[in-house]
Structures are given as structure tokens and as C-alpha cells.
Length: 170
Image (cartoon, rainbow, N blue to C red; front, side, top):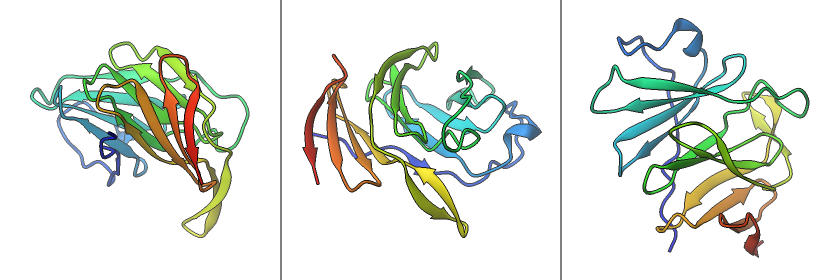
């Protein structure tokens, strides 16, 4: 059974006392809420791109997870497309513009698994084509599988144990 994805499009952050710098308030970015741990994850187009994990109960408590720099590929400045926590909050998955899906440890940001994902396609964003590949992410209840939907029209289910695709539908 697959859970509904927690990822939604975010509005631009408003000024707040929680330590978000002015450079992090540039554009609308993804956000996901972890029901189990009461944490939020948000993305920022810093150089390099980064995720910030917030403790909702202690708004001043947050940490920045910087992602390794991309040197080539489509939209290297637009890396943060989708994000979703595992049900237990110990991992999160995010989609890269080149179609890869990375599963990371939410405590350290360390990459745990890389999935092939979906091929990138041109998608119109504010009257300009941008490369995107993955349109949705959803974890199964046990956190052993990840479902991805792509702009290629395919739905795929991945085993997180070995990174293999276990199902695909058109």
C-alpha cells in the first residue's frame, strides 16, 4: 500500500526569526512534512543547493544539509524539484532534474541509494521550458519501496534494498 505523497509546492518563505537567511528566500521551493517526527524539510537554491530540516516543535532548531555540486546536466541551478520523507522520518528522497532519485539519511544528508528514475523532459514553467523528469514521489508504509511518477508518463516502483525497479506502468 502506498501512502499519499507529503510533497507540496511551497510559497516563498516569509521573513521569520528561525534563522533563514535572505539568500534562502529567493524562489518557491519544495517542502515536505514528516508526520512521525514533526519535522519539515525545505529546499533552497544556494550555491550549492541545500535542504534545511526544521523541528516544528522548536522553530529555532534547524540544520542545513548541503548537496554535492553538479557540474553538468540540465538545470544545475534548479535541482530541488520534489522531496518526500519516509514514514519514520529517518530518510528522505528527492528528485534531481536529470531524472535520478536520491535517497538520503535525514540526520546526516548522506546518500543511501541512487535510483535511475525517469528521463528528463521539457516542461513549461512561467512561459519558459525547463528540464524536469520526476513529477511525484511516494513511500510505501514500511519504507522499503518508493513509487515515482515521471513526465515520461510512467509510474515506477523501486526496491530501496537493492535499488532495482520492481514494477512499471504506462
